[in-house]
Image (cartoon, rainbow, N blue to C red; front, side):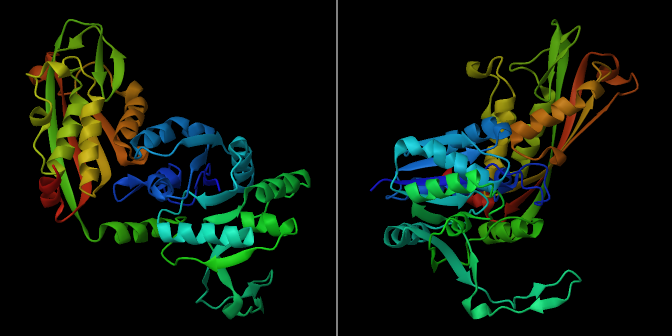
Length: 399
């Protein structure tokens, strides 16, 4: 029996308190979607995995896919304007593989367990259409338009429905096609699509730990689960490079035309070097020269983005979080203002943090000192992070 999984990851997640989709937010050092996908990759009965993504997230997901453990094939399809449409398009993309059973899961549920996956598969084999549910402990009410209670359902028979939901593939695809043809576009999950098309849907035992991340408080709770108590660490970095012959400089990962270049063993990006040292300092993990010595020819002319990527990875390897990156660039020229947004976006991309967590400032030294004489430029960086108290010891054991 061929079993496929469809991970729905095309939503924008506007309620999560961040300017990036919630499935790509960092959770205890790793993207939410990575945590949601991995259990499907390692489950022995799941043969193929397809992720329905937003077209704008293609590059973002490609980077995450490259970091996932090797094994099963992971294919992608572009989702639609709603969850229902994304599932339908994902099912159409899975059709050539002709699976017998499909599990549909939301990328915003990073706590799915192998045991829950096994229960879902067994329920689909037995019932053909099955969804996980957990008992409701709060009192439930229906409210009228004026806000008053109009009805109070019996909570003993109520269940909060989760994912993964499991179905006979052919039946679910046919139900989605029919719902689409009939103009039914606001059904909230795949169990609802099946019921609307006349199918019986079985409810099997869910998992209270299978939290769906929607609101900022959900992320706070998820971080507490995964990381325990985290302590704040603030560290600084500094770098300077002299001007020399050339027609451009690299600042913050952005190429800027200039009447001089910067002298250095790598691309001489002082801004990224300073940020790298700030993150390494927060991790108590030496400095940039220790990890990327200028005496090593492999770093000659290298892009400094890989240094910052490495340092951000060291924070996450400790189970830490990057809260904020603050950068000040000191030079008479080139002007940083016109490139501020590009630099901010590039640092956000390299460090895999929200752009709102990156601050770029620029100033001159009022023509004083080597920067005032236009002999070079300097960069000062501060990294604000949270790390487990035992993080340094963990790194020593696993390095």
